[in-house]
Length: 130
Length: 152
Image 1: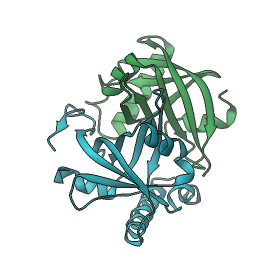
Image 2: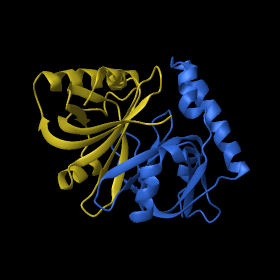
Image 3: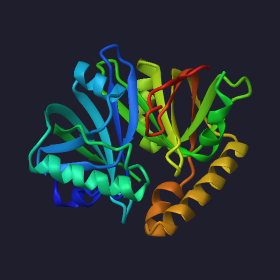
Image 4: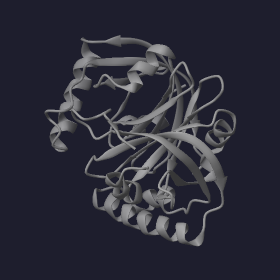
């Protein structure tokens, strides 16, 4: 599913876009700093704010996220489904450390706080036809 | 009425137009410029049709749209509304998009991204305008105000 060619787009150098949908069919789209590689069939997204995204995922676990290779601008769309949240462990610690680094670089130290690492199953990866 | 405080972000920012299918599967496409229409109750977003097929299909079926638009300073807004139409862009709209895209390519290049790569996405002009009647506007700038609804 997730292959070597996709990994440069998951290093957090270019923001990703994440869309969800409520149980009533209302879409929501937001920008996230990074999509983390977990294994060939899973990615992790940072849960930072109690938001519409979080509410939608609780109602309807399916999402769509695009990732971009910053060196080539190759873009990939991932159809994903929420599996679980992690609030400790190596993945959470790695994500928290990276998030704080991004926050520091962008003057957002007091704003960005990792509440959980949300794990999603990847159902499909599509390359966008630039 | 779309709040005046959002106009600069609409005009200078780049966004992501989100939709959902009738079976509640989300999809989005990047916007390459936008213009607030004369009555200030709708926005036409500029997109590339080749990258927006699922989005256009969803809009025909479901009609609900959401657009996140932000600028480099992190100021951002979310616009929610109803699909009105998809149409060709005017020469004036294409000119607006080119000005914004050229500026953005320079900014991204100065940040260290390879210019030829950035031009693959932002150097190609949009060919379709998606007009959305805006019903709600929310602050999306990171921070305590994020998610706050702005009166329209």
